View 1 (tube, rainbow, N blue to C red):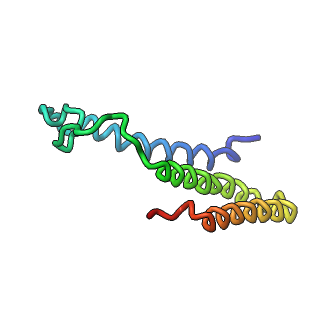
View 2 (tube, rainbow, N blue to C red):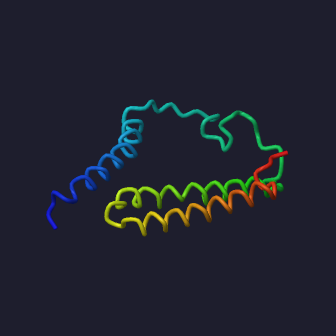
View 3 (tube, rainbow, N blue to C red):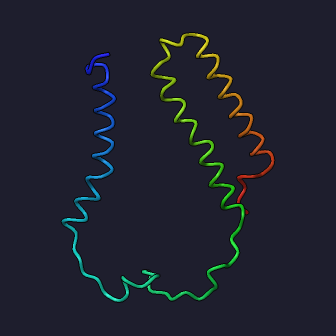
Length: 119
């Protein structure tokens, strides 16, 4: 294996790191530093805490978040599949269609059960 084969992958990683790290570094080094008591308080919006920190949250919020992560992760499987589609051939295509059918069935079940209805 030569470096030429890995060059696109390395370039993709470098660009991703640059896009993720460069704005933070620029903001850290060039951004204004004017702390005041309101900014250093736990609630920057200006309101003091008025309820107990252990108040109850609606479970549906977490259900929606978990479902989003579950169905969003399918993209992580679709990208390498699409890149290697020529090598894996028709069998790989059928395998991915089965995978997507299972995801669609899960989404339909979730929709029918009302898991994504926010009342």
